[in-house]
Amino acid sequence: MVVEWPSAERWLMGGASVDSLAGNHINMLCDSIGVRWGGSPGERRAAEYIRGQFDEFGLENAAIEDFEVNTWDSASSSISIVGESDRTIDVRASMFCPSLDVTAPLVDVGFAMAHEVEPLGSRLDGAIALVAGAYEPFTPPETLVIRLERLAGLGVTAAITPFAAGGRRTSLGHAGDWRDEDPNGVPLPMVHTSREDGALLARRAALGATVTVRVEAKMITKPSCNVVGDLRGDLWPDEWIVLGAHHDTTIDSPGANDNASGSTVVLEVARLVARLKQENGVALGRSIRFITFGSEEQGLQGSTAFVDRHYGQDPIPRLMINLDELATGIMKGVALQFPELRPLIQRQLDEMREGLTCHVMAQMDSSGDMFPFARRGIPSGMLWRWRFVGRHPDAGFGHSSTDTVDKVRIRELKEYSGLLARLLLRTSHVAPEEWPENNLNITEIANRTAQERGSVLRTM
Image (cartoon, rainbow, N blue to C red):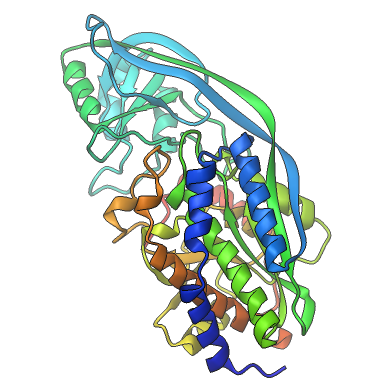
């Protein structure tokens, strides 16, 4: 098969822009359906919508694959300052925080670094700690989970973390490390407050205040689901590339950026490459499996279930690319978990002549659905975009009720869709002999993951 690349790529970029359904998809997911917490009716409605779109686009084997998710529900949470019964403090329990009812002295521990907590000595035993979630300036950074483990070891009973940005915002965070065997295990019960009330609590801590923290929560098991659809290649139909994104949200978020943006681009790329063959006769070389995952926000349970189901004994994919938080900024390239495919992917990016770059992450990134694939020895990565540095200022509303469609630039999603469709079409046509042999060792990957536990992901 000879592909006329200029005409094929012109068609993909034109289809991504002029005929885009990106606005339809993201409005359906966020406005019509709304919250899509793993195991909820909203998640099921989203899955049924995505499966229906896969069917309309002509994907094969479009299906909803169910699995059981170990989930969490918080009925209520509160922070109160003893002696100030008329004051309301902004509060949100962190994900998988256990039920809690404790009254104790409030101690401001700064960033909870060793040099800060050691002088506090016995004051921390039985206390509630006010701890900054960000990294302490000028010192080697430590993840919050490591600092929470330090506090727990000193007898702290609970932690309160203020949100970094102003505007009385809170965000649903996580106290665990997704590299652990139990990704939802928490070293210390933790609740969040706003920046403004965090400053108030710091002032009260300096005066020796006592606070009460209450959380009513429960752990439950519910049905969640992944959605899958295949588009077969004409040359090497038994070789696969996987494109994935999670369709779920946190417990009260419409999840426009995180991650209706990624799910929308999965749908758009599937539509584009399917129509390219239907209308222009240009087919994929190798097959692409399109997936949206459930329960990502609950410790990557959907992608873990998918990998366990499909890649035990079966041949593994050539590559998996994960899409997450695409509304944070423009596409810059690809960031891989392992270095072996870097030259191959960079060649495809160079041929696109868009100034895109392929990089390799310094650590195993456990923050997204590429991680379970990487653990299984599957070459994987994510789109490199302005997620951490230089991100759009109004994209910082993740894990909250204000992660809404107005924060998303639909035009950028169109560009993502066209560029990614071009990259995947080109990559699907790379001959098998040009791919390096996959020598990734699962045991070595597990050892590396354990060694990197607690390390701070390098983002630039």
